[in-house]
Image (cartoon, rainbow, N blue to C red):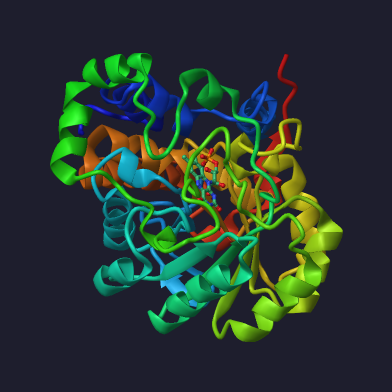
Length: 381
Ligand code: FNR
């Protein structure tokens, strides 16, 4: 793992180990992937105006996230299907996040159960819930998370219907796997991955056991999101707020007036997110949407952002533009795919070390010193 010096190195290692269809599933976005690329490009349109002669010998990276101390302003975001990269991949990411001292969010589509993660957690855990047409199923998941002691509930709102992820269609990618001649060849050409899947046992979407509306609840591509409830709206969210006893985080917004309404509804945090470019292609880059949302929230709740974070310097830019913390999805997935828990830990420690160095080079000794004055807009041809 030490040979991987950047998230991009881990991405390359993931690409080598994974079958093409599995790699494309995590790496890809919707349609023309304009938003996927746009999320990254937005970071290049801001340059640092560094401060100097500030004592940065011992920078303090720590912060609080939703009232709990965190080693740095970073959250391991919810990502389904991590178990298809590495056996019990969700546990690998959770353990790496907690070893580093940051929160971990478990996806609805995880391959480890709500209770299993809670039993092994050594830090803050959040449960991310999708809302199914079969509402009592979602209610049941939320009740399980409450009972298991999760600190936060993440409701993802940018997924009324599945995004059109063409790489998955082209690759015939689905969960459970479809064993077409091309896929079998693809799997056979990646024996290290194939062997680990055989040894680890076929991963299941553990939290969706017992789901009765359709037995293909988890299939990606042709039916992604088919069982999700596109009628989910503000009143439903309000009911969840009333029922959930701890922190409520709403993930997947871009509009300031919605952030305002979420604060009024009693949300503890909003996540400016477009699902990493996997849903609405053409959606605004999250970094571009962040400042207006942060202004609207005005400190009454926490503001997080995700999408395209691959460097510690991206974290500094996000904080400078108003985020309290950032989430990562693919960074830890690339790490997990490359080397399980060691790989996930490597991804997080790369981001931590880059974040520390960037803070020092910007002349900021504390997270609270990272402000808008650190950035100037840059024209990128
Ligand atoms: C995701 N994401 C996601 N979000 C969510 O709320 N529930 C989920 O189950 C998943 N699953 C998922 C799987 C995979 C393979 C990816 C890549 C992403 C979205 C995720 O939480 C986050 O919003 C993005 O990944 C952020 O963008 P980056 O960091 O991947 O660029």
